Length: 186
Length: 281
Ligand code: SF4
Image (cartoon, rainbow over all chains, first blue to last red; front, side, top):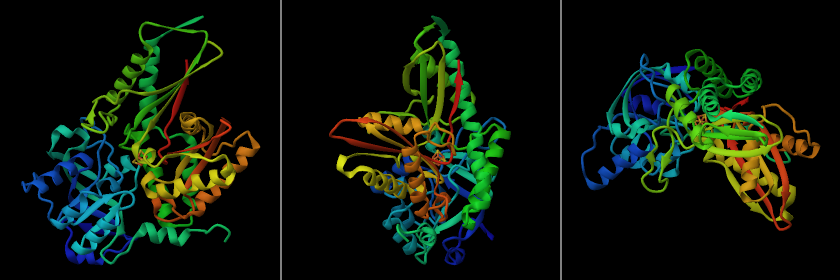
């Protein structure tokens, strides 16, 4: 069953989300990946203001392919989230409410998700042409020089994702694997 | 002696890059079609539905299957009776990559100075080229866009010869387990056993050019492939790591003679976006 959620994510919605829930996200999200995260966290460390406000936002880890002239965006599936682990807890502590990516998160990120009442969602890695259909508009709002790694603001309609880490300590990657694992010799 | 203008190679490379990134191979599409019914996990079946829809949209809309259109890995098999004319072959291949990735709206993911500045080259060059010289007067070009997510989960180990077959099996299964959702499963696993350090890696990468579902003509390797596939699927990682029966689409093993002191094993992980196209000139 899919449930629809609107951005910005409220604490009520977040506390209701459980690992394994399939959601369709509608609203405004931010897009950023490795190089943009590095710059943001360097600014935070220097005590300088950020070019974007992360409070209440969802960051989608994506570096889209170039858009054709008649399209809002090229293909736009998730990239591996683990590369953002070093930067994520500080952003969550500043009020970031959600991340969309693919792959394992560190314990520090999972702890920061619980502590800050946030959520980590996965989109289907490699389903990038399909996912692009749910992105109606996108514009670069910071770090244009980073090309595919620039920070974008996206308007999404029924963007498909699945909850991986929730505030109750649920972890879909662990639970899913445990359910289907066959031990050697069993 | 047959003369081939390098412009022909350039144009072929450009076409192959676009073709590979838009059009998923029939072998992989066929696998998804079966898996949509066979996968036991509901979330897993949903992943296969999305991947089939993705392949249709990419094909119909001239969109890359995945935003990560990779580094361009090029296998060149050059007949020894071929003479290349009209310029430098290496530059022609890079020009082909430049045009294909530009004209096809493919993502440029190549950075120079990898451990310092990491500056994007802007045109996805240079290509990663592996050349072999073969009999004949033809040139076979295989182009495989290789994304970062799965490549990053690949690994190589110089085992002790005493570790033998069980050592090889454990290393492969362990590498797939660690890759998990990061490598966009269901994966294709390319294994190179033997040769030298770089030789094993190349065997692994080359084996990824096989068709999903093809069987190894060597019965010893075929049996090893079957066992590895079973063991990897028993991990329960499933499509996208959400839990399920299908973690790998296939495992391909290629071996070669090794040094008396060595047992190199390379595991090259390929995500489900298993893209490669070839042409013979
Ligand atoms: S691992 Fe493959 S399918 Fe996943 S994002 Fe990278 S290139 Fe795309």
